[in-house]
Length: 102
Image 1 (cartoon, helix red, strand yellow):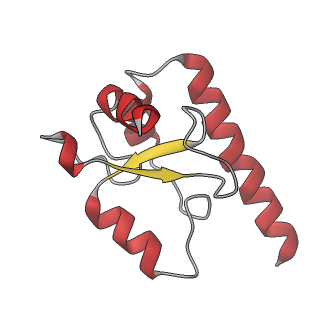
Image 2 (tube, rainbow, N blue to C red):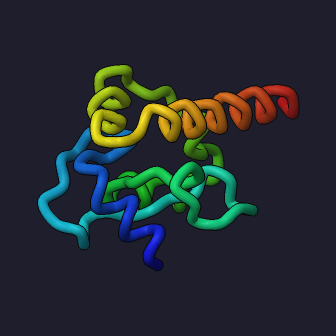
């Protein structure tokens, strides 16, 4: 719980849509690799709408969605550069792994 809240406090926008959060309750942690825990480099923060759409749509995952460059820059502006590289690397890895299955 502490790790999620620590990460939530750092981020001010949704990873997918760029929504600017007004409170901590609006922020929802989403794991990139569901087999791993809530580490700083394994979660992204989403708004409620994006979290629900990812949960309801079985065809889309966090790594199959095309990310807008401006939103990514805004999201990672408050995070460490190393964490940015790790998160984006994981998304690229799962995207390429998912494409191999198709």
